[in-house]
Image (cartoon, rainbow, N blue to C red; front, side, top):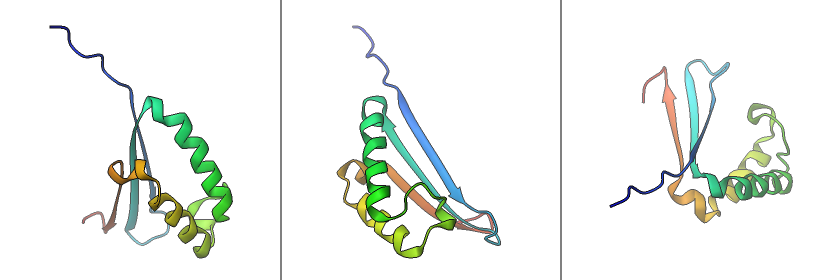
Length: 92
């Protein structure tokens, strides 16, 4: 029996921890290679539509952040691939 061909997996991780007095908000996404390009294009459209544009998260207005997160919440692909946690002083 032949072993299955491994699939390429992308993991993206970002955090907002600068100037937060030890409080971190960590977000990670796991996606397959064949989903990557379509997802990146979709995220760019969502950034534009929400008003976030290509600005850093900390420099984005709260209303734009909220609109962007609402858009992300409505993407079925993220329902089992997007994870986040809030850490305080380096601990859960």
